Amino acid sequence: MSASVVAETGTALTDSHVVFADRETHEWYRADIDEDGNFSADLPSNTGYDVIFFHQKQGDLIRSAFDGVPVIADLDQIRVEKEPMELGNYTVPEGFVTTIQVVDSNGNPLENVPLSFYTQYGAGTGPRSFTTNADGYVTHAASSEAGIELAGSMTIRTHPASANGELLDTIFVDEEKSLTVTLRNPEEYNGIVVHDDSGDVTEPPPETQTPPASDSTAQSIRTKPEQTAAQQSSSESSTGDNSNGVQRGFFSNGANEPEALSDPMNLTVGGFLLSVAGIVFQMVGGK
Image (cartoon, rainbow, N blue to C red; front, side):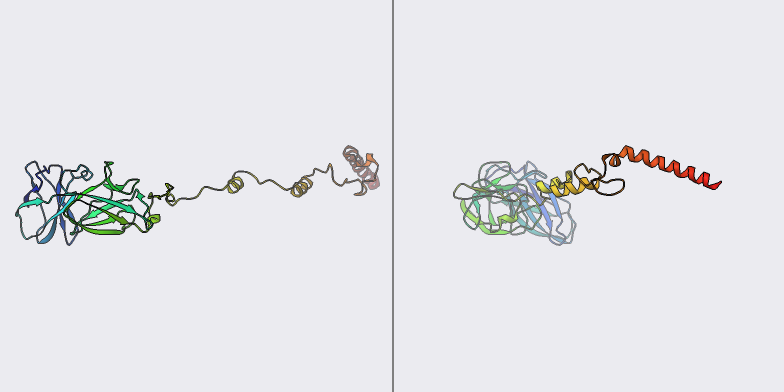
């Protein structure tokens, strides 16, 4: 399968490629455009293809320079019955600078909105090339200049990393134009920043993550909680610190016994002597 292509404006297309998109399997076959505007691809037969132009090399970002060539354009719809086929010559239409501002329902500019642009055939620019600046205007990821070159019927969609996105507008471009589109649910996207008229900036919540522990939670994990005065008193009693508690005597639990009978050393020696006396009594009585 071979063909050639030129730009209506005469711009060289060596930094571009063509895609043959299988309409049944949705598989893509890419072909680089050489310096003479020629391209070719080996395609399975007996199937239909959309032929789409991309103003980029394979693996690169969409072109950021304004050169009169649209970033993406439909070229043809074909059916391959057998190989080889000569498709002839194609012309990429002129691209016009289209200035697009993205705002919320209150008219506030939205920054960092991920955007893609789709042709009638359903091919799109992908998620990496276009976003919005602090004033809400569409810019190329590699350029600070607002605007995008488009041609013909185009659909504008948001392109979040983990969702299908939202249809913002469908437009037809045959001249330079400016327009404003509204994103009604910016809070559902990670990274979008709202700039309101007062100059305040509303940043979105970070991506879902485990919130940091509060001081009380962290303390309960790292250290033993502090005890109340009553708990401290109870704890000290249970561990044997009775300096301020009830004295235990030899003959009673009262505190009115002579000090000698409450002395631990005297009680230990006395107990030992009584034990020895008991043993001696048993030996003598046994005889």
